[in-house]
Image (tube, rainbow, N blue to C red):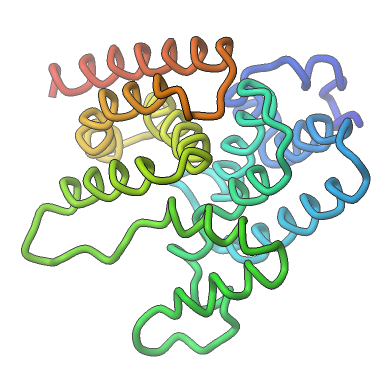
Length: 243
């Protein structure tokens, strides 16, 4: 599949943020199609349905200067291309990893009123894509934080606890962190410093999790991720030491 102006061969090898900058959402969708082309037809159909749902749920969301869907596509493509993981449940959960946290009402199909219906949203994911997908999404969904404690501290506590018990969720969170942390240089304004402060303390936690024998990653994928964590540390230091 070729994206207009982007030959398939070039699109298949470009860094993901380069695809974003040059070709935008259309380029990332094209890259996604290329990445899943080798999967069985049934798995491709499930992934296409998950992408369609993610696109509808996050249609009005943006990440500063891009559609939110771009982030979800990069997280998923990274898992497939750089981590070498073909597991459709993991890839589907990656596409939908922010759905319960950000769009619980739309996902559950209820009016915006009262407490976010997270259990109902997870039940819909389980019904459409299976209980394993719902469990993975639940593991990477941030809880509602206590207002009298630092939100970033509570975030790190949640990440450490959730990923300690769910090895496959580590894969999704590591790709999510890479997009947010290593990709911090693609942010603008106050988001740059706030993101660096939020994510910098996660580096040693993720480094330890990547090294665990039960983390389902190949040696090559582990090496790639550790290099990315090193790069994140360099970027965080450059941002925070100058701020």
